[in-house]
Length: 326
Image (cartoon, rainbow, N blue to C red; front, side, top):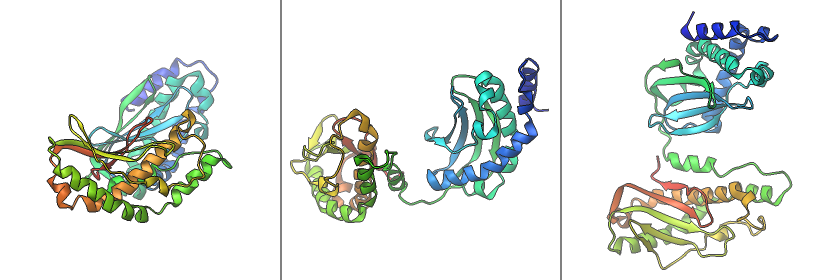
């Protein structure tokens, strides 16, 4: 019996409820083992995972919803809601609300039982992986086993090309209610021809870079492309070290977006839609940057070691980066 199983068994002896029969390790472990290959496929095809996974964290919140976090080798969370077996499907949701710690320990034991085999599956082995992947199972702000299982194998990295372009493409979608202006606008967003838009942006961005390379700057920390939510203020481009160098020109990228859009993109309820627009602009700029970084003007720019290029919405929100490409 493993140490983890001993912990669970001791906790189970103290449980006086009528639901012990639900905590059948072999039965639930089999269900998890059956579902994991589909989960691995989902990580690869729908997120997608683009750099090696170093840690998989299965976490249950106070409502009993299970979230799987995928962590890279730098300790950065690549995905916080990757697919995983859910407590409802395992028949454990009601019991979790009565005794969350007991169910979490039970789930950890079940994962420990199946992970050595699951990690040999073709679905797992096609994922980009670190040489070691640590699996943890725990409650949000509660009991946790930080090392349920450690996969050890050869490091596997996939050459995805421009990884950032793929991430940005994935980030241009969000849920909107059917038959609403928001849904219609989001459908339009997916139909935008980013290659055509990139071709239009290229000469303008080139001109901006040439101008910026002639400025007497310190090593630049970032290049910023700024837009306004309701498309009423000119697009601005600039470079930043301790101060901002704003290009005197502008470019009407708003023409890429349908005039049939929500009445007020600055509305607090449209944060996700607004962020998708930023990501779509960044996706186009990222495609443009593939050519721009080969220009002498870009190479001539004094750049800080942490130099980035990003799209900023003037209202608020995290600015999506479109360079570097990793």
